[in-house]
Amino acid sequence: MKEKLIFKEEAIGLVKDGDLLTAGGVSFHRVPMELIREIIRQGKKDLRLVDREPAIGFDLLIGAGVASSVRFAMLGFELFGFALNFRKAAEAGNIEILEDTCGAVINGLRAAAMGIPFIPVGGIFGSDLLKIGIQQGNYKVTKDPFTGKDIVAVKAIEPDVALIHAQRADIYGNVQIWGGRFEDVWKAKAAKKVIVSVEEIVDHEAIRLEPYNTTLPYPYVEAVVHLPKGAYPASCYGVYDADYEHVREYIQAVKDNKFQEYLDNYVYGKAR
Amino acid sequence: MAEAELIPELMIKAMAKEIKNGDKVLHGLASPLPILAMLLAKFTHAPNSVFLSVAEGLDPDLGKVKLTISSADPRLLVGAIAFSELVDAFDLCQRKELDVVFLGGAQIDKYGNTNLSAIGEYHRPKVRLPGGAATAHITSIMPKIVIWATRQSKRVFVEKVDFKTGVGYLDGGDSREKAGAWPTILKVVTNLAVYGFDEKTRMMKVESIHLGITADMIRENTGFDIEIPPDVPTTEMPNEEELHTITKLDPDNIRYTEFR
Image (tube, rainbow over all chains, first blue to last red; front, side, top):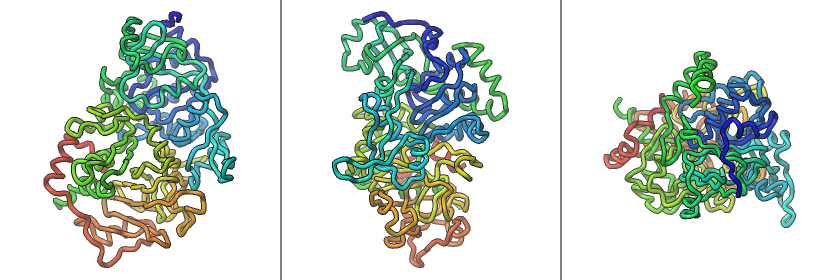
């Protein structure tokens, strides 16, 4: 094992323009928000985003203009309403939209984690998303080689980078995630590079005392960054709740055409 | 009209009734009514139903969970038996072992197809919607789908959806099965009524009308010809105990958000 604890500037330096990037968590929960803000600060370009049900994390990246495409099953702010930057960019044709469905996104990641080129997925027949997925080159209808029946094959999704926020890790990148894991483990195993930010850096011995909590051991992890409150304004299970007032402030800023002010305040300015 | 104030609770009860004891049930994001229906079912007629959630808590502690504005909030997994990844629910679904799912629809047509993707032309939409999440995948293979809509109108209940995100009975008859989707039972619960589908034509029809709602109000808010049987019953009202349970699970009245 070697030490992998580095600063966020260095860690996000590993992300290249044009990378296929995925992020952990879901909606407003355990999203690697500070790593995402650092991507914007470093002025990355043409990132291709992929995630099952992103919300504020991807909307922020899209609003900041660092993404050229986004693949998602749902990209909204739940009961708050639309992901407004995404909606604006989509309706103006400023971003390539690769709409998908949860089971296909997760299974595409699973295929990459398993090192196989595609995975058969049950269902999708009858939905107009089938032809959209075929057009996009992400699905093909094929025959089950054993029964001869039609089945949808989803191409493996191998992100260049996965950004993940977790509760704790040691300096070697042994990561412990508590609460909902979502498909963070699949994302990490599917990606070429995994950058993890954590609330707390703990002694290596503390990891060995709770091996059943080690969700992501060191061979999968490229870099660890110590970022307390690194999911803010998303929640981090067992550590802090989501700040829904901040989410409302964000939405209001976009509505009032004051998104640049939001970026100045919360991304470029008082770097959290 | 005092009854109108109980529409959310009435919908929750109607949705809960679609869950049988022992069913494995899944809810997704932005789903306060499904969550409350699933919890209410466990409190009442379906204590052995299995609660599967996008928050990933399997069977959380009914006395301790609290609804918040996000359906994946960790406050929804307090006291859970396990952290069960969402993909486990899709695996169950593909194995024909998931029994009921609750899904939304920005547009719903007379055959129960739903659109959650785009209003207008798909590639140049008038409104780019957030997307259907699991809808396209699992509506194709679920044995039972319950769609809920809190603001039924001619814009929601349309003759034909602009884009089929969710697979209903497609063009009616046996077109769903012919397209390669598995057979399903489809229900729609709105702020006006509960709807089922004709067994042969697969056209939507009214199953029960909520208290205070008239047949004319349903027709005025439906963009296609809808069958309203003359002897159609009134949707069952929640009793005092059920109302108390709902209020206790949702002290911040998150359930009203979708009605505003």
